[in-house]
Length: 267
Image 1 (cartoon, one colour):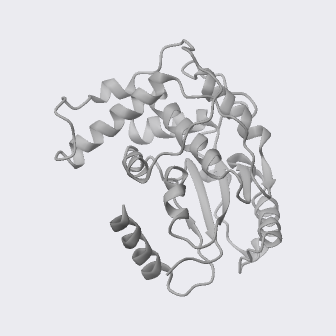
Image 2 (tube, rainbow, N blue to C red; image 1 turned 135 degrees about the vertical axis):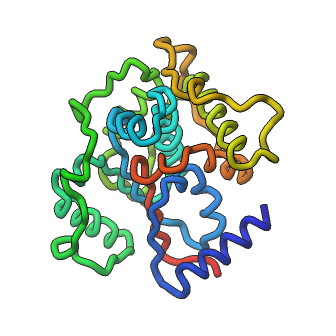
């Protein structure tokens, strides 16, 4: 992985130059944050914006033709990893719907929180076009506080409730224990990764036939399996890079997000 580390440092230097502050929004950071923490010489400040999973199901069903089981497995993996990998870091957890209902208030509060953590953003939310309007919200859950999709597993419902409980700023995030994903959720993500490898990098794919769209579109069976509460070890760099390519193109634009705000970086 030394080659990846060196290349990442070069890309960061090319993109941001000598800027004293780096801000980026890339949902894949949810999966790869441990890798990037090895690149920067200071820990980042994290903003996790999470969206109701039912809204994501609707969005990716219409945009990417993905089944509910696949989408919920993605939602769970991204948000659970975002919480795990942000443990101990200054982290603000914000529910997406709040940014639509009160963009200036929510972002203004976030700016104040970041300031208290030593991160000063240049623009005033009150005079900045935040591009957060109800017109941009094409899918809205019937109830912001309820998650009862028939394809949802016990671990996904637990994560939904945990995100709600963690809403707000945390000087050092302590997410607690997260339920282990249902085995079928992990299998769906594995199939998705294999299918994308077949499409984009056949030299890396296994000799097994590529899974079909039907395989990935099927919702998870309505059963709980053997979910249990346990911590999950952080993957190594190779595993993180593999998982980061498992999401279909266009499915990672705005539905799960982690915003890393390192104060400085290693050159």
